[in-house]
Image (cartoon, rainbow, N blue to C red; front, side, top):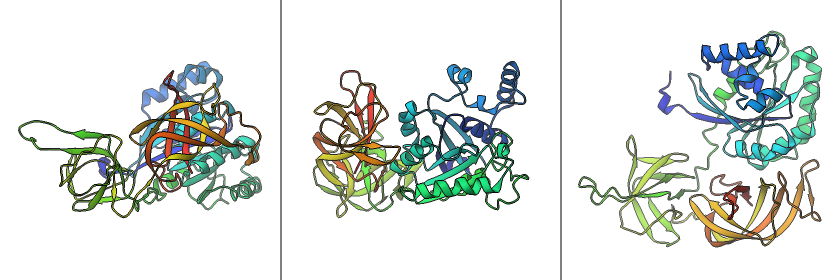
Length: 419
């Protein structure tokens, strides 16, 4: 068994149309991998009994909101944590309704894997295409298409192949590197944790085996060194009188003790003297580790600044083109002013232009309709009040993403990917 402290963490998100069985699938994963307590299972069993259901409704394990339980749907993003002897997992269970597309963007933004559920009876729906497109837009490296409810089509191989082919034809248009298909029955547990006896024709792995073994080590950018400074550590105690460390999370690349680095925005250079963590000193740090860097020279750095390599800089600029997913009832305003959050930096920005709105049904660009409302995705041009140190989202998901906040209400109104 691996030391839990050093076990790899896999984040995955679930998506699919309403009633495709996302919550049941997660309930089944938690139950069959022995990740729930007896009293939780007992509470769900009693709840299922009260509702007059046959058997235990495992979906109730994840549908936490009372409104969700009553309607039998998922409304908010529900995060669940579980682990097996091989890996730790965080699940973002996102809703299937069209009006909750923004919740899917929230849940999927940090995921390594997206599970897209398809009801074997209904096949590839518009909502399936929408979720697959958002997964590709968010550059989720691995896509697993779970063709669920195989028990309701008599575990028919032809039906599975039909849906697989239909999805593959659509996915060629998407920017997804790795697509994997698994026929399952979340209700009965076929191919979720245990191999199905009902589908001897399927020679692939179970879902849990895939999640435990999919290679995610190279999902981060280990080439371009990026360290946004989050906090300056000055203990001012007798033991650490001259200590000055820069705390933050490595957003890309590998930083080693003795490396020459450049500080942005000043352009000064220095050398890494030490890499500290809560558990002691390290020789090197890489994404997504949280560390404190100490430099040989006493230079002025503060929150929002960035430590990079001398010969490998991010882009520096105030004019950006961004794909934005709008979260708010109030539409996006051209010439509207918003607070912009990017890595550890906060600035203000103005929307200069709306290039086009994306029609998610067809993936076509609508150049005429510039009315960007909740759940719409559009390409916009913005100008920030101060220079940002950024990469394209395709190159680095951390330095390539921004968040728009309404200055008046302090609500998060949009999430953007820098092009």
